[in-house]
Length: 320
Image (cartoon, rainbow, N blue to C red; front, side, top):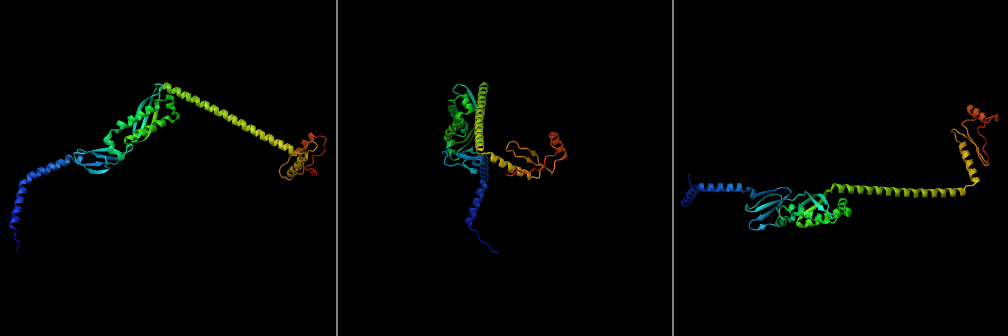
């Protein structure tokens, strides 16, 4: 077998490198351990996970707050000497209570529910201008200030009854003011309004009496409308009777009576005896059989003892 001859220079270089590495193994081991320990110690500062519904703002030690970039959800690698501030950008609700002094010096206790969140695109400016505690620094104090200013010119009764929508106007003004501080306040809900017990009872009693008066006025108006309806109805009936009386004559009534007599005579149902009266009376003599039953005949004889014979069952119909 033949083997390639090694270059003396290459063999010498390999030998020197091997000897150098062998002499530096302790130092390299220490450097590697230090690097691993540093990575483990600063891991939370180097690799940062931003969870759903959160966003990050970077503050550089040698550059200040980075306002032109917002870090979204996921893993991000940063310089360990820099600081990343995590903001919750979900919609949240803050409960707040405070007192309002009315124009007459009474205290009205308001309980609010505020739905808010920071404006995502302006998160860097919000961090630079206000900071993470923007809720207690700006949002709540400004809402409280606007509500006190708007409601302080009214009485307790006006606030309690929301006269002319004054509470709505105060809320809209507060929303506009807070929106100028890089925070989006979607709604301010008034959970409750509390007054001194005596004032509250007096206002409720007054409102109850006002509702009673409105119900009485409604009843009076209803009665007036009903009286007007009856008056119109009576006038219509009167007009109807006047028109009918002016169009009816004796001949027309006699003709209608004859027609009714003929229609009843043709019926197969049970019939009764109707005796006409007056000069133009029309007798309608209708029975259910050809002759009067014995019981009815006995009754007729008792009423008319002078008559020997029963009333004929079907007398002839007079000629028209």
